Image 1 (cartoon, one colour):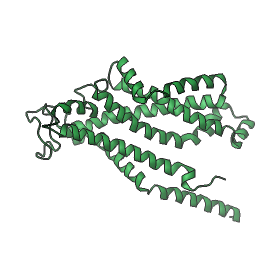
Image 2: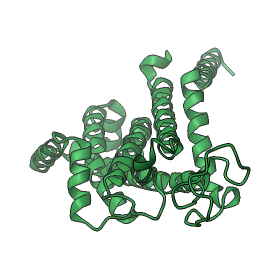
Image 3: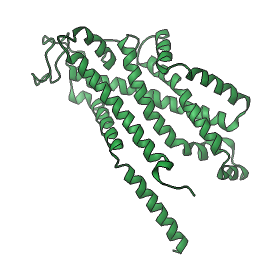
Image 4: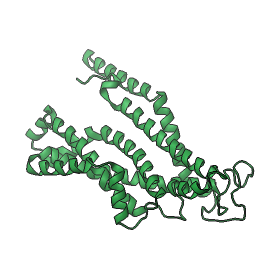
Length: 294
């Protein structure tokens, strides 16, 4: 091994060590623990709880007074803990599926329009900018009221309105990357445009997509709860944190847990996703990681 190879290997080791150190940051670790905890509860819900629709004679039983109903029961005698973790299943299914769907469609459209440019790029960007001028929740509410409420509808709605955010960011990245020397070299070597996009450009956008997916998940969780709360999201009796809040608001003075516990679940999940996104942004952003590109 010559001296230049040794310097190169030492640089790689230092860069890797620098990235590993950033994974130990409290913001990232707290977000990761909170997010993984909610995901694991949702995955193992059938092993941890009973039927979320099962009713009993123990109506409005307070939390922590019975081992069989650790978080109490609602006005129909249904177990709150069971409904919370099954509600997490539905919420995470909608959030993750629609966020990943928006990432796929947005990345493809943003990379294609940014790479080829021209009239199609201008028209697509004007359409996306017009959509993005409206608040996320307003468009979601409009589309959710047009279609039949349900899980499939929410996934489609959130995928549609989440796509412009990904497309705009990926397009901007592609516009800068396509002028890089290695892209020009790949084109000079006869690589097709699609090969350059999928082999050389999109992999360099992955860290941005990952951060944006995490942020999008927290936004979708919050908006889904709002839509379910007003009756155009997940429909009762299937559990959702939003419709649990709606069902419990009339009993808040005599059964606080019907509102407080779903609210805490929503707060913890959104907080975990936001902290995870902030941690990933800090780790994957070269400017903040101290890694200098050569």
